[in-house]
Length: 390
Image (cartoon, rainbow, N blue to C red):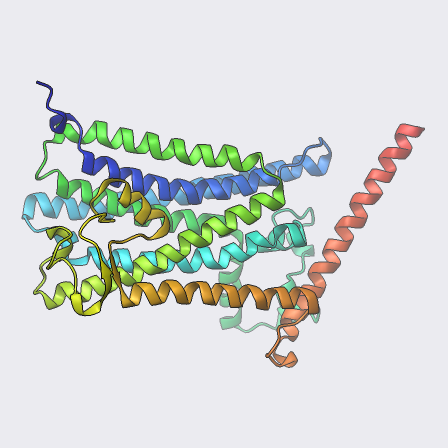
């Protein structure tokens, strides 16, 4: 009789599927954004933009690969300790790693989401600036950073301010590499070390097929989202992808708080990882629980693990995870309303204008660049029309 457990680990399959799917979603949304900016004509400027887009794609993949390599190195240390020292160091720090990385990822996605949503409003200009003026044809010495204003104060920067400016320039230039780096680092580290722990209780022959199936299915779902996104118009694509990213981000924030609360409960239990005991009584802190169901465990049970990765589902709702989830959506709603007001009026309400002068100068410069870009494109089209008529 065929022993499936010997050649295929269901637990490994779902954990790899969860990590692959969450990573693929982030990477492919970024790749879809870059593809949307691909020019359709063969002009000289279009060739330059295609070259820049290739560099941006490289940023996304390098960020993902670097995060993967680092997580393998860190995970290898934990696995070696687990096998040779017979001490599972990961079990002592797993919840802190998970909680902190979830919170960090949520912050990054939240900030990036507003930028994605406004791309079609301000066209390419703001994101060209955001990505280090990558789409500009001017030489670096001729560029003016809108954040600096028009007063030429850049030359008078002190050493600390220059360091700060250099850091800001670096974060703008490699903006698209940061999110996939953090995502693959978090997801890959969890997957690698989880496999090391599972390997002690299951035959090694059950790992390869489960890993391959999880990676292939997760990648297939991600590619399907990528293909479907490219068939949408830019505006609808940006709206759908931003809403989806915010759903993921809200889940990440709730998961992060939940992991930190779980860590607190584990310490109260003398270090016993109660999440590994199942879904029944004793696996959760009843004094800090809003509701609980003895099934559908987001850390152990099949497709519920996928729901945990995408929307932050958990069968134990704590006060912190519920309030943080609700608070996140209240914050995002209020923030978007403030940004809408700023788009209409040119300034943020409830904040003194003198505190916003630098921001206002930046917006003025950005719209000037947008106007110049629009006029330049119209002039090129008019010249092409005259050549065709002549």
